Amino acid sequence: MHSSLRFYETRQYQGEGQVFHPGQTIYAYLVLEGLGQGEQNLVIDWLDPSGAVQEQVHEQFRADRTGVFQRMFVFKLSRLGMFSRIFAGSSYSPRFLGAWTCCLFLNGRSVKEYAFTIR
Picture 1 (cartoon, helix red, strand yellow):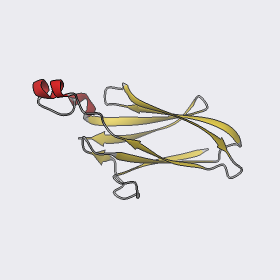
Picture 2 (picture 1 turned 60 degrees about the vertical axis):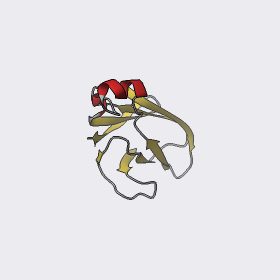
Picture 3 (picture 1 turned 135 degrees about the vertical axis):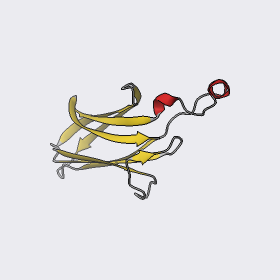
């Protein structure tokens, strides 16, 4: 089984990159190839720089005879609340800045990790 996860600035697959800014929407295009036929269970953990899971995606699908699965996932950092912005002076927690990791799991098994940066 082969996987690829590419990060883009737009839904039209433009601006492929690994570095994004706080508040920017990230479009992650996933391709899985060489899947066996039948029910599949995909989990993607979006880990912040501290290693904490900030988002978790669950996707169940049925692989057909082509053995290929393609999907666009959208990720956007949550802003801090008004109270936090007044006292922190920032819209985003500093813990969001740095190297992020997307961990892919298929049917309970680790597939691959992909990295991008928020700065």
